[in-house]
Structure formats: structure tokens, C-alpha cells
Image 1 (cartoon, rainbow, N blue to C red):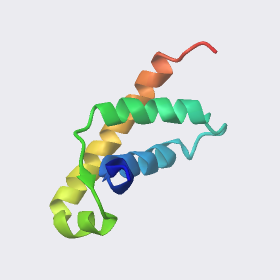
Image 2: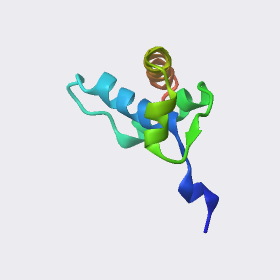
Image 3: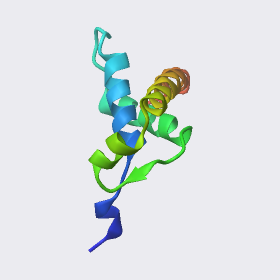
Length: 91
């Protein structure tokens, strides 16, 4: 039994949702590789916030902290999209 199967990083969920939201309006859906690169860049700019049960996050974050997290994630994802677009790999 691996411990890693019992923990998650809260920011992975929030960043994933924010990437989809910010890229939803694009005419051509972005490739999964692009979204994965954006996620990596964004997650590397955020501190980890681990939990065992998702419900723990709902009970232990104040509404103000939740608002600040979502605002920070939105900013970081915007910056990560710009970074990945500027530094795209040639396939």
C-alpha cells in the first residue's frame, strides 16, 4: 500500500479546472500536451496543499482563503498559458 494513493494536492484540482475554464473559449481546443505543460508550469509556481479527503478542504478553508486561492490560481494559470505559448516545443 503506497501512501501516495491516499493523498492529493488541492492545487492540482483547482488548476485543472481553471485551465479548462480559461481555454474553453478558444475556437480550436488545445492539445492535452499543451494543457499538461500549462498545469506543470502553474503548479510549480504554487505551494503544495495536500489533503486526504476533499471534504477536509471545504471545512478548513475560510471563505476569504478560498477566494484568495482561486484568485491566485487564476493569475498563475494565465501566466502559465502565456509562458507555454511563448516557449512552445517544436514537435
